[in-house]
Image (cartoon, rainbow, N blue to C red; front, side, top):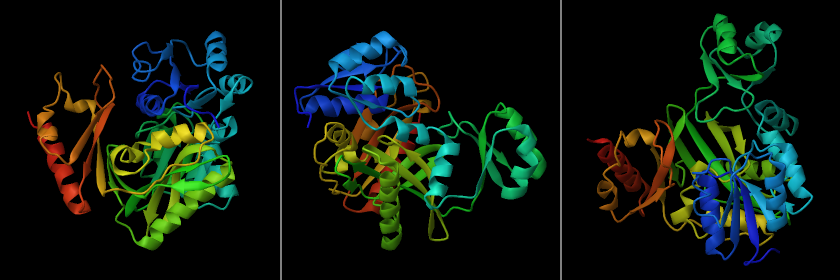
Amino acid sequence: MILPGETLGVLGGGQLGRMFCEAARTMGYMTVVLDPDPLSPAGAIADEHLHAPYDDEHALQQMGERCAAVTTEFETVPDSSLRALERMCRVRPAPEALRICRDRIREKRFLRNHCLPTAPFFALTEQGQLERAIGAIGVPSLLKTSTGGYDGKGQQTITTEDEIDTAFTTLGRVPCVLERRLDLSQEISVVLARGDNGEVSCYPVAENQHRNGILNRSIIPARVPEQLARQAVDLAGQVARELDFIGVLAVEFFVVENSLLINEIAPRPHNSGHFTLNATVTSQFEQQVRMLCGLPAGDTSLLSPVVMCNLLGDLWNGRAPAWERLLNHPETRLHLYGKRDARPGRKMGHFNVLHRDIEQALQLSQEIQALLQEP
């Protein structure tokens, strides 16, 4: 076990890294952030912020020498950096798990090879495969870049077969996944922790609602049949075990005619898990610290039904939102990420609404969102 008083590192200085550092410091650990942005949210509160690219050898050497263990905020950290750190300290999650999850083609093939349910897909790597891909998957479908896409970016909707060439060109003719577009009834996710001993601890299932490809709100517990919720938890645990994953991981699901299909795997804390900061015994970020340090998992019990809502940069519109409209409600908890530049679509923070009745929590969250959008 790595105990309080030691130093923990995180590659990545965004809001997930910031909340990891907050949890680690609360528990008594020192923190080091490696991020090239001098204004990174995590770097602003860490004990030390190394301003350097993620593959900078000197910065990696400093981090490896100072930290007892290192984790990641996102999955696209270079393999070489993780391997270099592994020679000096504990690194979790392991590089191989990140390598699979950062690439949609690898991820989809991993799911298929382990008989885990996913939407029909075709791995598309070159122009000559377009006709065969659209013939196999049909329309409507989604063309998604194999790497780099998030929050609706890096994807094109295809409604007729002759659109695939334009879509592939628009995405830069890079490797892609062509995926059948399905008629979804809901989207849900499971955030879990898996430790060195192989034990899996799952949080309650979240029901997710998106707007323009970006998560708008999460409703917990998800309003799905109990059997479906149990199946989601079981499948998420199977994903973690097959990956031999150690850390905090999220699995996103499509609900199609009361059946589950795995959409994506996130090998880190997840936006849909931000409700845990106020509504569970242990937050997903404390859990991340615990898994990194080889400690037992914390209790994942839900203390209250909760709705989590994202706050995007669109709300700012040149000035700070009228926060009193939110803070006047005692059921709400506001979390801002310390980002200075409020751009449209950028996640600036979130708020949680706790109420013993989930429908009332949802109604209040909608009212607050509307109030914040008013001039």
